[in-house]
Length: 308
Image 1 (tube, rainbow, N blue to C red):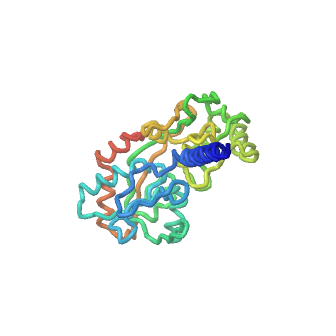
Image 2 (cartoon, rainbow, N blue to C red):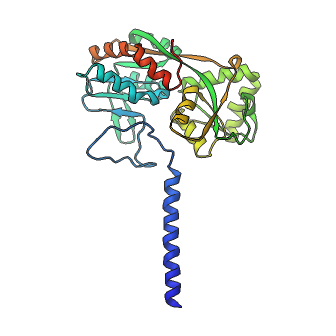
Image 3 (cartoon, rainbow, N blue to C red):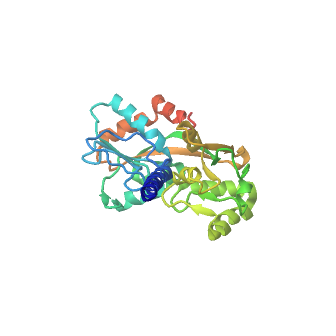
């Protein structure tokens, strides 16, 4: 009898331990980075603990540094690889895909700290929405537009809360993930869309009342958070760039798109600025040319951006 009890206890302990391990792994099954990590002698990315998805490539002695507005992260792998193939003498590239407002502060202040890492690289090229670039035009010797985007609503697969339009986001039962307008250009664009769809009343409901009661979540990093919140069941709907939905579906994540009609939508223009004081001027000029090339535009188009 005692042996039987010990056996049952042992099996139960194994079951509970296995269940806890599976649950822990399941909690991080959607975690970024979603890009392909560079090869190294030691791979030490630990989901939920050691995970820095918005810094890319070679941070030591880079031959090109590019600051990208965050929602272009899905293009980075192919974009940088394509550029390297055209210019094989440029082997070490460092890139960031943080919110454009944060990157602008980094440019102005000269440094950024994430955890225990302090970065003091000056970018050669900075990309952001047209309005942000225009605000900073004195920093640039050359500005080029290269891609466009519009807004969509991302919802969990099957759309359980039956969100079909922007005005549905004011419901108390709909948890919204919203890019923070304080540093996200898309946040300000979404606010314009709210006012187009429902006037000041809709804007106030989503951005004031629901923020206050916690049913609108303002992102702390950038809109990479919104897909993750949808996937983990923490939010019911998220206004995002259309490219975000295209990418999540492309990598097999269970999300759906709710289209926003043209009369309530906006079209954003992506621009790149070549810094006047670019530390690596030759590489900066080459990358600006690559961004406006047909090859680069096809990469953006693949991931749901619009090109001309």
